[in-house]
Image (cartoon, rainbow, N blue to C red; front, side, top):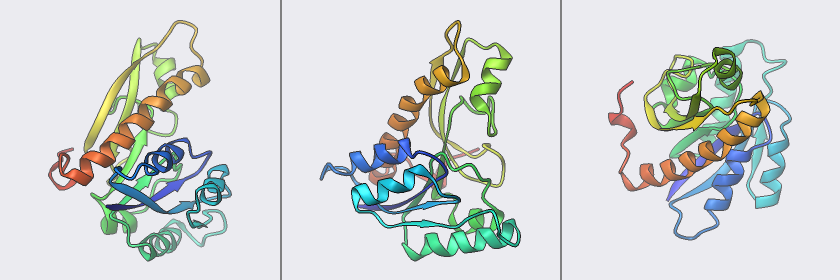
Length: 196
């Protein structure tokens, strides 16, 4: 049974998918703690599902490295087998990558290496592409450039807005994440063997 710590910055829709999946006794992972870099709506899921939650605010930290050290300490307290960045909108500093990679993974609303960064959906629309996607990657020191665990294409429809396209990508992200945790748990995916 994999122990997961999930880090969020927003509503936690991917987190909810993991929590709901783990209600099935056959699911091979359990979320042991939820963390955030701000007061995020998704932290309420901790109370709903009986999962401890913590916040390590980025604002007010002396610098990014010290913030990263505090976040790492909070994560390590729970002794996770896997850390999931799920809508976590901060680039984690090297101290976290060095300590946790390759057992730290991230969802991204684009078909990487296309459209990395914080505005993957907006960038896809601006580029005028007919398809984008969702990806799940190992976190490394790059911006969304780590080894790819799973990805899937999502069509861009005429008249799509950033919101409508993102709403079609989110269910794909959730499905990829829930399945990847199964694959990591049963050894179908070996994070140490993935290539960038």
